[in-house]
Image (cartoon, rainbow, N blue to C red; front, side):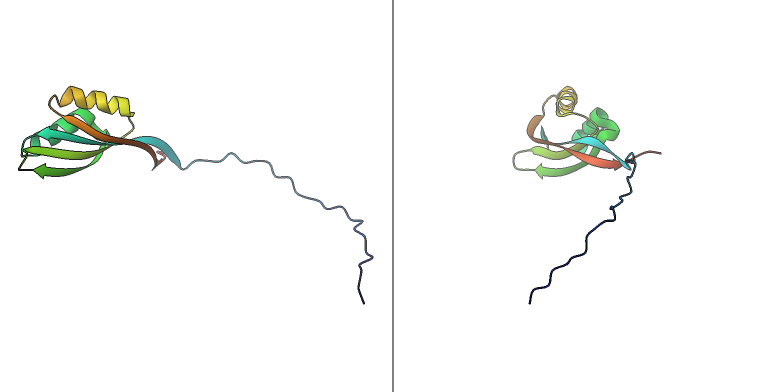
Length: 114
């Protein structure tokens, strides 16, 4: 025996229309450039000073590799709030004997200043 419903839906379905809320962002999106920079020498001190002078507070992180055999120091630098073109321009102006290597650009999210 098969059962079939005979009830009809005479009641209209009411839906609450919501007014769209403006999404309040709790963060801002800023550019991030990661680039390898190699300078001659066996001490990272001069290169570090030049990086800080050129990039200031936008310099976020760097990893240093010192190659004693070939007398060179390589920095992997992360720079925020600047474009790749800006970073390359600043580095070439500040580090005249530097070799710029692999570069990667992306974005990061920072908390919004209130």
